Amino acid sequence: MKKISFFLSLIFFAPIIFFAGCQNDQQLQKNLYMIDLAYDQLNHTAKANMTLDYVNTSETAFENIVFHLYPNAFTEEAEGSVCSSVNEPKVYPNGKSFGGIEIKSVEIAGEKAGYDFQGDFDSQLVVSLPEKLFPDERVQIYFEFDLVLPNANHRYGYGDNAVNFANFYPIACVYREGQGFATDSYSPNGDPFFSDCSDYQISITYDKNLIIACSGDDVVTEENVETKTTKISCYNVRDYAFVLSDKFLIKSEKVQDTTVSYYYYEDQDPEGSLNTAKNAITTFSEMFGDYPYSSYAVVQTNFVYGGMEYPQLVMISDLLKGDDNDYVIVHETAHQWWYGVVGNDEYNESWLDESLTEYSTALFFEKNQDYGISYSQMVNGARSNYNLFIKTYKTIKGEVDTSMDRSLDEFETEPEYVNNIYVRGIIMFDTLKSQIGEKKFLNALSGYYSKFKFKNATTADFIATFEEKCGRQMEGFFNSWLFGEVVFIEMN
Ligand SMILES: [Zn+2]
Image 1 (cartoon, rainbow, N blue to C red):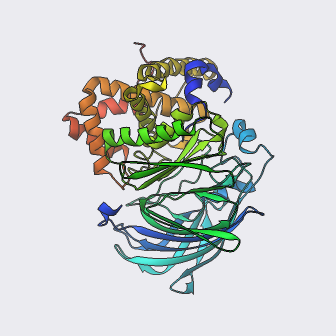
Image 2 (image 1 turned 45 degrees about the vertical axis):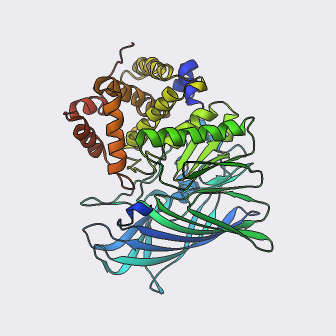
């Protein structure tokens, strides 16, 4: 995710933020989600069913499987889960609104299956299996569910211009050997998600006046009498999201083997935005390794923050009104590598994708110098703003927690999260690149990309890859940054 106008805030208005608050890996055993959804535009609801062909990739026999029900973070009971009070006017410009998911039925092998809810605000669904699921065994689970979308400028919800369908279906929690299913629920900080790469077959039916912004390796739209149905197949993605709007204009162009599409309704320079997305795909493919999908959609929509990443699709906020548009497109595109292809536990180790994405954005502007944003401007801006954050927090609170490697719920405020993950992240990676040199740095990152492609990596995996690629001990360096020992940053 990218906080809105964050870059400009950093450089020019720093004090404000303190106070305003696939196919080549077919040997991998994967889940297959088959989703059939019909959207009711009038009532902002949807009826859906999903057959999940689930495989147990762990070494443990399962008696049940746990699923996230992310839409329930938008229920009345979950108030405060999806955004801080500072951002409420932006999320709910028409007043508070609630939504959620109602599970109507769960079946296994044609029989009703037992299920229960757990977590605050029924944030997870626990499905009981009729018999143990042993390692490498598969089970098909059928779900029926109804969705109510909130009137909210958020990942899941409808606004004045578009309807965002993200994190909208029951998605299996990642199983960690010895620890069980990862069931962290939601947080107003960061992107509280963690999932395994899977394959998807999706069918979406919606009124004819709407246009769908979506991605996939195979996308076909059929016209019905009053509706349209779009059928999508995609492979090796860790989530699926789409956006509907009656306002979308579309620009598309091919870069390498990927069709890049820009869906928008308010952009003075849509050609420029499309070019930025194409440049970002090209730059990061050269830097880290090829973008592995045949399509990529950049979608303007009503969204509270600057942008939000999903595999093969990113949301770009219409609130940007042109400011920071390129910057946010580059940041969200970098997430295709860090979060999308190489996954991580975004709840407990958000630095792994977010700090790396923010620094990758700086690397993009170092290679593409005609955007009016320079690498040194970003790094120096980060240094001075991080120092200001430390001084301000010390003055107000008497102390400041400068650790990066902690869970989203351990960040007390949004500025604390933003400064330690985005800002400190830029400084840490710039320091590392200076110490080991650009060649080794990029070699280590592309090694990390190819080693953990379509998998989930951890902080330990990241450090081990850098140590292996650079041929030296690096735990001391990373620990001093990640656990907060490096406090004041010297200005160059
Ligand atoms: Zn981000």
